[in-house]
Image (cartoon, rainbow, N blue to C red; front, side):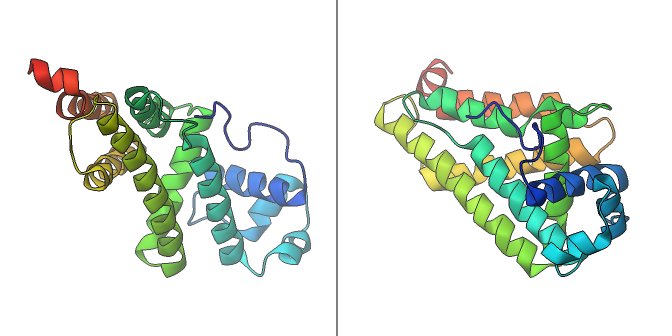
Length: 210
């Protein structure tokens, strides 16, 4: 899995610069208070520059959400399944970055917070819902492939890979929501509980000892 994060380097072109400015403005003002002017001010651009690329704020924010999810998918992408146990725990580590709960969020934490804030728009907006569904399906497939490889290698219990992957992703998203929206959420405890579930219910040797 990648060690780099989106926006870690200077934007390479105008589109990337707009994406970075949207990310920066979203951190400052939140979704409800975001405007084209505030995004443009992050770049010292005129609003007309943004309207040259996007029809309105909704178009820009949906494009940013697509960009963010593409980057998040790449960030979580596994290079191989030679070590299924490590790959699955690495996936958990990537999405449950403790930086999301810190007052001064880490770069990963800020990205995950933006992901959670924009994900909530899927409640009312079908375009957001369709896009997040696509990402969730990709994450489920990725986790299921890891589980299937672990079963083949004899290091995972013979569970149903896709059903187990759906369950793990649901828990991951729930912990992320708690960590980013609840005051003093037991983030580390919940994260450890998930890891212990994986180790005791999925990993063969842990289940054998219990």
